[in-house]
Length: 82
Length: 82
Image (cartoon, rainbow over all chains, first blue to last red):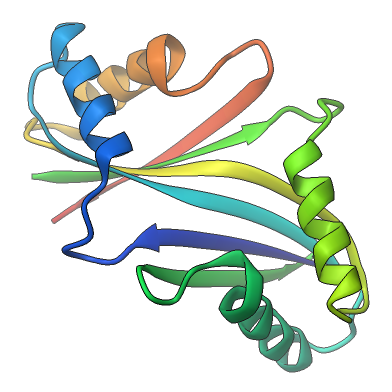
């Protein structure tokens, strides 16, 4: 069994209103030194596939087609055995 | 400047309807071998704080108070210098 950790982030230059809201909240709660907050998605996928290469190919396709919006988001993933 | 990568995940046993929906979508798109999908949050925080220990303490407090819901979510973070 493989565990895939997928990180989806907004591309540089894409506005992140959620991140801005969190930054303002942190500032108004008294946290100093918070320069920037960007919010993304994190997914853990359990795959019953043998072979990391095959898994990586599948996950790339999943990201392109469903998990991320390639127009405004970047993604990255790590595959580990469990 | 420090870059903090924060991962927030649902605790084991907490139902994840979003994850279930993504799993069904992947299955109906023809992806085989997807056993489980859990969806969490990923945040990148730029901190203007000297000292990793001080930063780690601050981030822990941010997570407990705002970024995660400790009742149903776990969190983890990594601090790197940028």
